[in-house]
Length: 84
Image 1 (cartoon, rainbow, N blue to C red):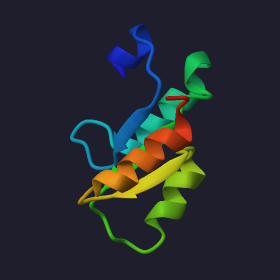
Image 2 (image 1 turned 180 degrees about the horizontal axis):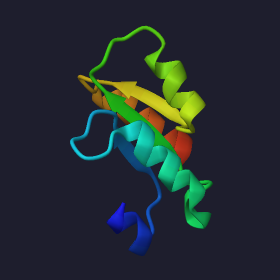
Image 3 (image 1 turned 60 degrees about the vertical axis):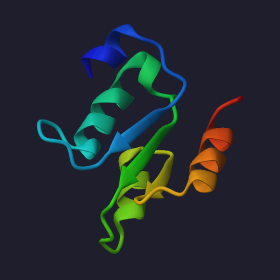
Image 4 (image 1 turned 180 degrees about the vertical axis):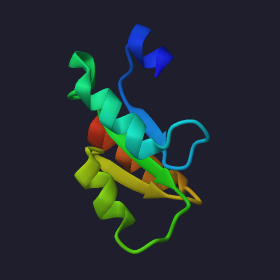
């Protein structure tokens, strides 16, 4: 959160399970910031819980990639959400 407040990013890859603040909480905070309303946030998770992708999208993330990450699928997501 501290880095996001002072640096400009093109995309955020959000881990769902983090020690101090989980990815759902962090996404909610980012979405309240002016520069956080439109940045693509992509969930990265090893979780296979039914409905997890839908929960990520409902919270405000733009997309979802499950671990283990396949190189081609990650490249597709980056291309989809950035102009590069």
